[in-house]
Length: 498
Image (cartoon, rainbow, N blue to C red):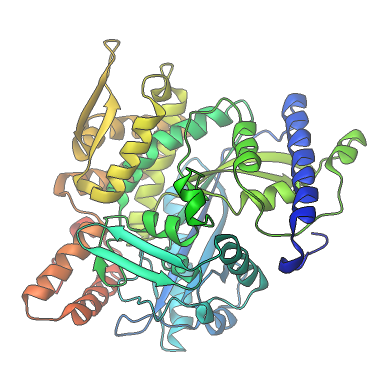
């Protein structure tokens, strides 16, 4: 990257110049797409998992720098909060026994990281939101020590011009005022990448958008924020509100938030990058010396650095990704819907379901996005985040009769979407044993109507009924969750909590 502009210097003139550069990047991307200069995908999938650090009592530990020091591997990196880590798994071909291979790599890597964390009285926890986090934990002083986090915080807070108000109504009501974006660090997720051709991109992205609600419904694992029981996947409203750079008057005028589901099906990857530039002002003032159009005219491939950086500050649940590897550009769909955990088996079950379902939906000659308005997909996503495995979702009826039906998610998944996901995994060339093992986990979650969120909520209420106060019940829930997660058994098979 080139020149970094001090935040206070990012005034109107600099913003105008930056906007001009973003538009040149867009023009270059449009030319690259027209010239079909993109890499041919090799059916590679990528996986990232955000993690929490907690002590033996289930309380957060602000020790990621010390833990990373001891791990000593580039596979593990910092995340926003000092109680966060991220593990990145190298891309794998989506074929054969890839799911079992990933499971083995993850178990080995996470066990090693957990042992190293133990040297500073911490442990690794895969969970959407750590229930024992409090407002006192989520303050600017507990952001990880990296310039990009400080700069992002400063720019979002400057754009808002006031403190962040968290206001989430669920089973209970949370209202909290934060002086920084630190509450975002509570949200720990799994990100799934898939490289696609430009021609294939819109179908895969549309399929991922349609599938997002179902992913959340069966995989929800974040029912608590600051000790309050809210939505079954509370990451979604918490992330939206804690990254919201809009002043109240802009929000009231309908300006879009930076955490965004979207508002339409697309016909090109360009649509998403163009929306980014049109709807969202740049946040991080870093300029690159490259002129993308000059690079193209010279026969080279531009990095589109400003466009890539800007895209990274817009938190779509399915994000377009442009990259260059070995001098060749490529496109990926980054799926950001899923929470972390509870176990490696659960993560790989969610992974199998996503890749299989997206392949099937994208290959369908009568794709779901031609039979269902985008607004229904957005409503489905909201319902899934609120109600999890108990949600009712709207989906096109099978056959040529057409029409939409609203039905319980477990029925939709078991009757229609699991067979589709199995066919999708077959199309990728995934071994039948892997396919059946991990999709079987999704089937059992639906049969028992149990996922991470429902288990946590039930365990918490059982602890309260046993006489524990709120804080002790939350801590007991986390301790039981960690103990059961270490067995590696999927969450639907767990015994009741405390």
